[in-house]
Length: 490
Ligand SMILES: Cc1ncc(COP(=O)(O)O)c(C=O)c1O
Image (tube, rainbow, N blue to C red; front, side, top):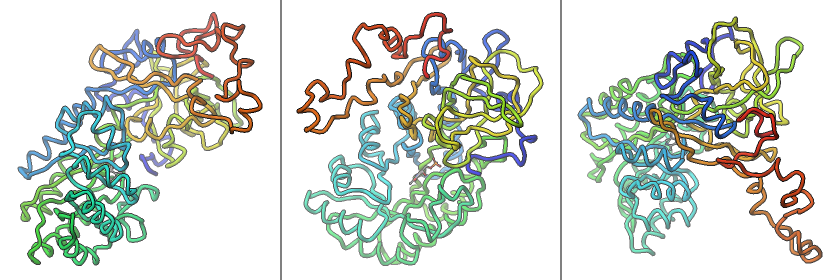
């Protein structure tokens, strides 16, 4: 299972064990679950739920650990954070300030990285399907490197660069035909996967690239998959890369860098996970003799543990065998369990965890049976209105969110010590249809409907206005008597 899974629910770590393994989390006798120095209950009462919460300290700690492991090798290494894992400007700005560059896969990610202040000379553009427009943008911003994934892309890039009078620094992405032994949906380095160029085609294409106008081949790249939980696949793919690099240099062609991709896995349960020191050791053993610059594109490892999804129990519903705990967060807020069967720790926020644990099924409110966060999860008794935290949602969490079932996108918060800030407001309900237009023929017959506004449904100042008006932090105002932050969103 992607994201780890204990052999049986009986082997699940307890909420107390999950908290103990995450240094940015603690449980206080009065405040309950706390991120750094901020009680989650405080955030919930101010902003409502569901809300994604990130710990700045956790990101700093992970970045420092990875940098230290890489520096200890004394190799020339550079971290290019994979923006896809979490593309919020605050996270990008933080990582950029720590020294990270960016690995982007779309014009939007490129724009985000630049907007966050990451300089173009630290940006790599990856991806199997870059549009002409995206290639033009990458060249116009003179980014550091474009990872090319096919002969066709190389030819198109050469044409565009020549037209613009630019030179593209190109790494060819190798498909090493190595199975990363992770979830099939995020395995990217096997021969049958759509990514990269077969190793056997690389020497010829690299030599060809060196002859093309507008192209300067600078190296090779690979990325074998995400959530890779052992070092063996890294070693196997690095061996392929090292062999190819040696051959290219022996042929007298210029090559000064290798982009070794991302993929370092994290422990979602308490399973053994590879360490940055282990990865650094594999890099040193594979590449030291070559004396090349090494780029890394970690995403998940830097940010997964830093995030959690703060959510409220809407209902506890008795099922035939055990209770269904229905949350106000759904697969639209966190897709990983539905998409990859991913396991995420689930921890009640209230103080005290001494009550006996009993298995429960933890579900979202969406009209899909896939909208399930956990089955047979041992949890203390939960009641409607209780807050719970779904752990380790910092990577591939909010970035994969949608407004399915017309559910506005959740708010986002970052914590730093005792401070916390809303870094994205909860999406206002009206934003769900703000960009929608009725077709011209409908608008002509009913001009007041041209922008999909229906005064009948949302009368300004009408009887329902109180229910739908915006409170602080753009949450929905609560009907009188409802506890702050609970059930604020249906
Ligand atoms: C090209 C590329 N680089 C880096 C990454 C980041 O992977 P991870 O978040 O597992 O480190 C990905 C994600 O799959 C990717 O496609």
